[in-house]
Image (cartoon, rainbow, N blue to C red):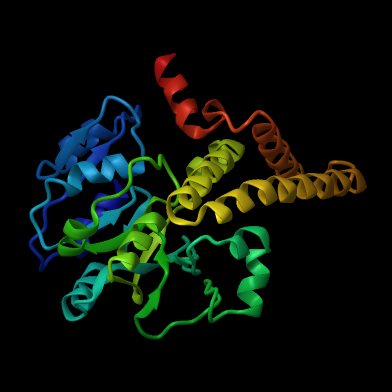
Length: 304
């Protein structure tokens, strides 16, 4: 509910229509929205259909010139939407604009990312960002002005309706992860630009679902990663990724086994990483079954 409160508190001088798409939550969210925010247009899904499908339900019936996709775990700071709107109105080449995401303590989160490539997926991203900050930006880069980027993190982003009409809505083949990256890539290919607007700030309480299902989340991320390459990269790049990525996972598994042995399995972080790489290795050995990801896990929970 903090997300909705922040909308009505900070967005006061703009005519807006607010949609909430509920993916069959079981915590009473639907009743709370109906009671606390009667003006909200509530769409109730009978199952968790994924991030892309849920957002598209609202995007297909929206009336305005711009849409803001806002995660339920995001809280707007004062002026965030006003700054996004002012930028998008004055920058006609912009198809998408993203914000600076913040942790609860006000520290910066990564809010932008590169399009996945063989380099980003085989080499260490942190090292790439350290050695080549211009090509591989991160939260450590300080931006004073709106900056053109490859992709923004989809927790809060404004999208131009005109660009959406040309490019299409989110690709529903993605259940979760990289659907906004795929969208930004398609925008880029159609000549639209993607920008990071640093003075538009939004708190993002991210990672809750990842903490509940850490290794399942990793598997779902890999499913989306392979899909992105299959859809947007050459067949050679896709094949290279499918060969090299399991080798990288195997190396990380061995290193984490050694690390846990040295520390006598006393470090929780090392134990968690060991479980993650073990599950990823098993998933690849089993030929990447859907049943080990989040998507099938949600379906199983709803059937039980």
